[in-house]
Length: 104
Image 1 (cartoon, helix red, strand yellow):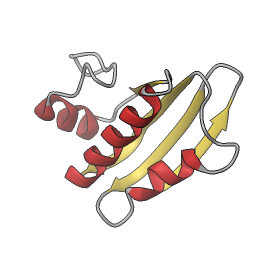
Image 2 (cartoon, rainbow, N blue to C red):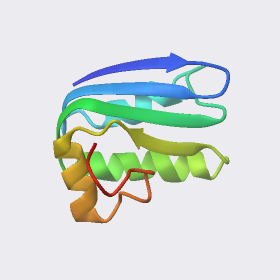
Image 3 (cartoon, helix red, strand yellow):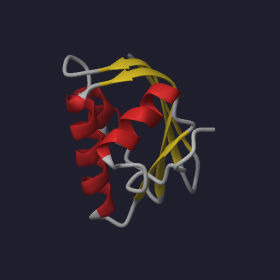
Image 4 (cartoon, rainbow, N blue to C red):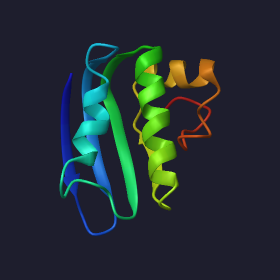
């Protein structure tokens, strides 16, 4: 898995590429909780190049969502790959992460 984080005044974008599973999913939270990396207004997780998510990855995404929401920071998944979209659909999490019901 590769993670790239970019900050702007109103939104932080985290780009996630590759497979996200039990072996590496903790890196998602670590990449935004490092000093100076925490979003201030919104976090968009771009998963266009994410090829696989397992239950551990979903759990980590929900942990991030809950943690940031407690501080009034919105978390959205943008550009989900078909694999990511399907997992979010099966788990009933499309609305939680602001993903449209129909794949792009």
